[in-house]
Length: 154
Figure (tube, rainbow, N blue to C red):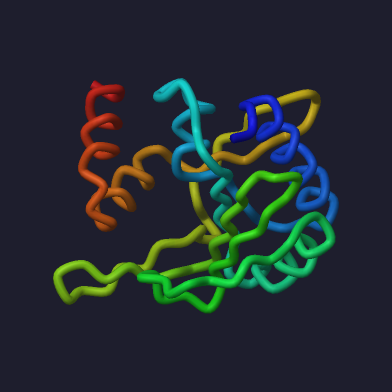
């Protein structure tokens, strides 16, 4: 497993490429929770991409790493890609749909999303909203993450 520093180095590499290409994107999932101080570690990098920028982001990611084949996916999405960049898994998600109890929920980066920006090593990194990820985790049935966010935001 890669160290946090190695994973953040990959994030910075992607940040440079995406920001230079004017891709609309934001960090989500466990990396978001790590950067916000909710958790002490994360396994991979999850990035939400504005749906219209997803094909361009996919092509740029092919220059940085290797696109993985998906072995079935419970997300319904035209734009869900997994890459390995310098040994780190990077999930790229355009709008995708999660089905829960027979209902489809769209999850994605909206054009008017409330983005918070942080700076790491001089690079501006967009973060999706923790409250949106609470909703996403709830829809995905990830109760432990929902409970964690609830405890941290009280």
